[in-house]
Image (cartoon, rainbow, N blue to C red; front, side):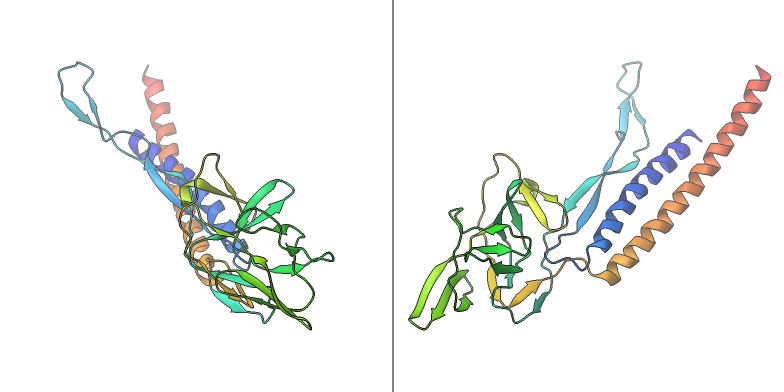
Length: 249
C-alpha cells in the first residue's frame, strides 16, 4: 500500500509540473522564434539498497519516476514569408544577438526594423548586434540581407555594405529561456559552430504548433486526473487501515 501511495504521489507531482510546461508551450505556439520546453524524468529512489544487517544482501526498492525538469527543444520552426527585407529568419542552428535593458540576449525572432537614427533594432527597440557585439547602422535605401547576414543598402549613389548581423550558437545546456523568445547564456559558456543561414523577408515561427500542443495538453490533463484519482484511492485505504489498526491498540 505504501508503495502505491508513493507512486501515485510522484505521478501527480510529475504530471502537474508537465501540465504547466504543456500550457506554456501552447500559449506561445504563435510566438516568433519560440522554443518549446520538453520535460524529462529521473528516479527518486535507488533500484536496490543493501540490507541493514551489512551482510551484502540486496533488497529491492521501487523506483518512482519524477519530473526532473525541462530542457529547451532547439529544433527548427517553420519559416513564413513576409516580404519585409528586414524580417530575417534563421534556417539551422544559431541565434541573433541583441542588447536589452538586462544585457545581451539571444533570440530567433528576426522581426527587425530601422530606427530613426538608422540603428537596426528589434520590434521592441532592442539593438541588434554584429559578431563583434557592436551596433549596425542601416542607411536609407533599398536593403538586402544575404544568407550570411551581410546587410547591403542600395541608394542613388550606388551600393554599400552597412554591416553583418551576428549569428552565434551555444550548446543547449549553456542557455536558458527568458520570457517567450529571449535566451540567456550561462556564465563561462563558450560558443560553438553555428550553421544557420539567413532568409531575408521571412520570420521563423515557434517549434510548437497549436494542434500538437493542444493534444499534448489534453493528454497531460487526463494523466494528471488519473494520478489524482489513484492518490485518493490509496489515501482513503491508508486512512481506513490506520483507523482499524489504531482501534486494536
